[in-house]
Image (cartoon, rainbow, N blue to C red; front, top):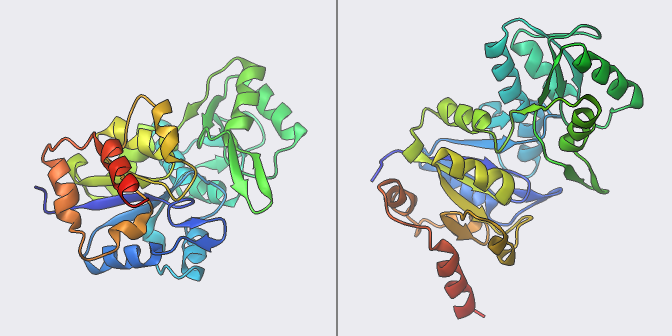
Length: 287
């Protein structure tokens, strides 16, 4: 059983839905801080800076600093700085991505870039897509902060980064490299930032395709929260399973739940794959 335990936590659908805090999420995060469990909030939204994300959480009652935020923009910028230090990029995206690239030594240019980098945003225009297409065909590499096809907003669903990337891939015949969840690039970088071993890392998310699949690929323990976009009945559609299933993170907030014992046992090799059946039995017993 491992003594150290850390968490990589999705936000939308796990901590909040839209602008509403999910009941018990603040209590769970307070518990992690009180018991000295290292944690990061992981997001595939590259629009906001770390400070902006931390402020949003603070206004909802979760007091965390920038050091607790890990965005796909950060992962992308760090990845590019290792691939080609002090390179150049043409960016389709907003402030969070631009700041992350600048902080990692990249210059933003309008011609002859090393990379075309696509992130979340509402500033996509026909002109920017046309310019990006020409640059990719001229040799620039296409990089996506994530490949989520859409994203929820207060006014409904809008096209996401993946939709823009699909346009460029179709127009150029070039395949994008994606860095955000579920890419091992982001999942590994977040773990290393916390200084954790694989066996000490727990991923909590509400989306099978990103959070859970990303954790499964890396060998992390995975917890599916049914407070977001995934329903229990959806699990039959996937060839992989989470290690644990919870209604929401409120289930982990109580001191009666020993986190080190619950997740430490899995790290020591206990088979938790029957979690789906276990959760269904519990659900039927309470209905």
